[in-house]
Image (tube, rainbow, N blue to C red; front, side):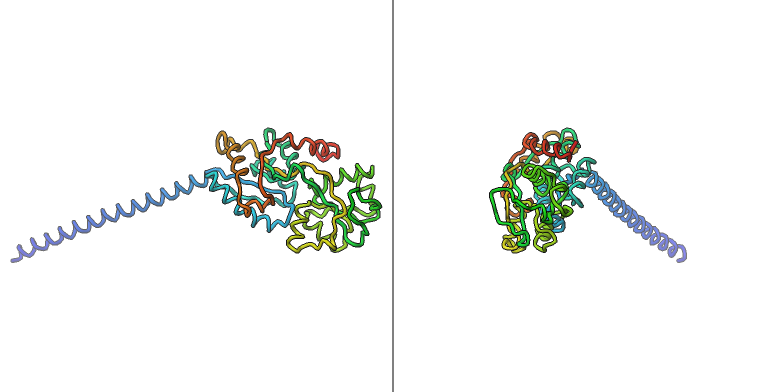
Length: 316
């Protein structure tokens, strides 16, 4: 009896050991598989983070918070069309956008005529690839509040030396470069010599409109598209902030591509990017610029801007 009992106990123990062993094997396989999955996820994550990101910026010619909101959908559209990650990088001011391009922190920029020239001068091989359909014939409005006692005219306004005058950003084409050029052309004096009061630099076209409306400055130079957009949105009263002169046309905004795009994303990517930009038809995407449509651009189209910038010593 005792011997039989011991045999049965041995059999039960042996069976239990096999169950424990099998369970242990299964658990090892499960845990091993989970470990492999985690490792695979980490590997995939590393590969994703290693992919190059197409970063673009834009001159902050309007409210910077609004620009970030408007460029987010454009970044998503470009990402889907080009099958690469695209990210908008805001610039604190006009020159910061040029510096980011120079340093390779961004590889695409929505620049003004002057900042585009500066960016391409800073980076050999950089190319203007797209522009708004209106950009080859761009212009500036000189705007005034009632205190200036000026009326709209086809001729450059006279008797303005006693007025308080403001440009936009120091590096703006429509808010500084071209207005200064026309001031010199029509008066024979630079703005610092012409105006009796210190000349202002508002920093953006929106701010120029606000400063002229408030009376802090009586006269200012503003991008015509920003002015018309503000009037349409009810942000600027055209009876208080009046257009007194419209400049002759000049070339302005452009998308400029960094030559490193070809290294980062492969040969032919710049042409693909150009085609994608020109092919945008969605008004909500174009409104970020704001433009009705985009057309191709070439560096040579901005030779006039480059010559004026050299003349005014804004580039070397």
